[in-house]
Structures are given as C-alpha cells and as structure tokens.
Length: 424
Picture 1 (cartoon, rainbow, N blue to C red):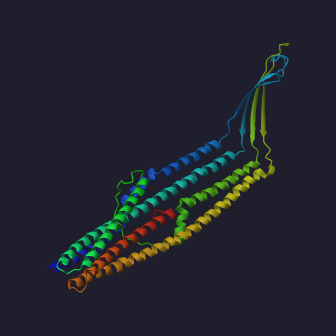
Picture 2: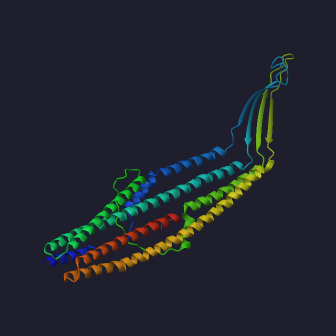
Picture 3: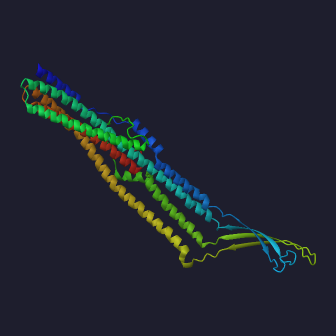
C-alpha cells in the first residue's frame, strides 16, 4: 500500500513537472517601466537642457550686433571753451551699425542650428539605451522569478519524497544513506533558492533606480515567453542602423555641420561693413551774430580681409579636416556594427537551435526518463535516488530552457538598440 502511495505521488510529480510553454506577446509591465524610466530620467533632462543651450546660441550669434550711439564735441577752442567762438565748433550725435557681409549671419545660423539637431540625436540614443537597459534587467528579474518558482516546486517535491523515505526507513526499506542524500538535496535546493532571491532583490534595486523609487518597491513581471525565431540578414541590419540609429544620424549631422562651417569660413574672405551717420549741431558766431547751419555726415567703412599668416584659410582647412574626421568616424561605427551584428545573429541562431533541442528533444527525453524511472521504482528494480536524479534533471533542463529564452530576448533587445529600430 505504501509502495502504491509513493508511486501515485511520483506519477503526479511527473505530470506537474512538464514545462509550460507561453506564447510570446507584448509585455504591458515592461512597456510601462520603459515609459516611466524615460519620463523620469535625469540624463534625458540634462540632454534636453543641453539642447536648449545649443538652440539659444542661434539668436546670440546670428543677428546684427547692437548699433553704436556716440556723443561728442568737435573743434572746441581751448582758450575759451566757447561754442560760439569758432564756426568749426559743433556738438556731435552719431549712430553707427556694423553689418557682416550679406549671407554671413544666415550661414552662422545654419551652423548653430545643427548643434540642436545633434543633441536631439543624443537624446534619442540615450532614450534607446535606457529602454535597452531596463529591458535587460527586467528580463533577468523575470527569469529569476521563474527560476525561483521551479526551485520552490522542486523543494516541495523533495520534501514529500523525504517523508516517504523516512517512512520506509522506519520499516527498514530504506538506508540511512538514503536519508542523508535526500537531506543534502534539500539543503542544496534551499541554498539555490536563497541565491535566487538575492538576485531578485538586486534586479529589483536596479530597476527601481531607473524609476527613482525605493530599492525594495515590488515590480510586477509577466511569464517568460517562448521563442518566436526570426531570420536576420546582417546587410539588412546595417541598412536599418543607417536609417534609424540616432548615433549614426548624429555623426552625419556633425559632418553636415562641418560642411556648413566651411561655407561660413569662406565669408572670412569677404569684407564686413560699418555704416555711420553723424549729426553736428553748431551755434551762431557771437562776434558776427552769424547763424551756422547744422551738418550731417554719412560714412561707409569696411575691413580689408587680408589673410595674414593664413588665419582665415586655416578656418577653411579646419572645417575640411573635420569633414574627413566624421566620415572616418562613420565608417568606423559601421565596421563595429557589422562586427556586433555578426555576433548577435550568430548568438540568436545558436539560442534558437538550443531552445528547439531542449523543447523538442532534451526535455521530452528527461520527462520520459523520469516516467521510466518511476515505473522501475514501482517494481523495485532501482533505488529512489534514481527517481531523485531523474526529477532533478527535468527541473535542470526546464530552468535552462527559460534561461535560453531570456538570453534570446536580451540579445534581441541589444539588436534593437544597435539598429535603433523597434521592429527588431
């Protein structure tokens, strides 16, 4: 009767140990976390302020300088300091305005406007980076909780087996070594559970830091989904990165800025102007009571743009060198992306095959092994430790299955970050 009870329990154990397969679907918990992390991010707020500073410089350096208003006295005699002694004496009111060569200010505005666009790409790339970081930590937290669930189930089953072994030991159907072995297994699974709970708290603290809240605030997670494999072509990934990756867009904008800087530097070879209007008010001459007319003067001045020491041509050369620098930086970034895409695609393909082998091969085999072990135990052909080993193998394989699925999702997240495309 006792053997029958144990057999029924082990058969029940076999059925509850079969892996659940959850379809891959949108995770509302994760999307909510990403949205909140982006909204609260101090880094993004810093970059937004940086963009505001960059945009504010456009008005500072792309408008005319303030006009100059002057007051003065002209030809005042030093023997009397009288305004009515000499006809050349006058009170001066002047107004002057410096004006750059036509087109120079708009060229400066074009250069400065690129700074705001470049910072916007920094913001977009930082936003993608935050989303990638949050996703990976969330996936680790979700896997850890799944691993805890599996371990807790294993612990419960081991405790039930332990009770059966103790009962058999009292009637001399089990050895003391069996009791020691089952207690060792229980200690090991308890240690594993505590380790996993520590990992859970670490992942929670990391996620909560992105949400600017206490490290122990609980965060809900969904179940680990199964893998829905996709076929990725490296050339397509590179093209997607060229179109969507903010980092690459930022380099392109920086190169465009240096081209505009070259156009602005060309204006150094054209003169700037200074327009001046001067009004001279004169009093009548006291000796002759002769009234004098007031005078108006208009002048136009401009600088002579001599390239002394090559100081002006050096600005053009600097802009040209910057264009080459950003072009090389862009090619270097593409080279690195090609490398990373190759690694990611290989890793994804590996994980897909491993998940398939476990799901279709190793896990069913482990379950069949457990079933066979239970049957052999029923007729007394093997010791209970074989049942224990078979059960542990099922849970080991199941845990590894979820680990592989989590690794696949983390690799997809990295691929999405590298391409800047949420479709990946």
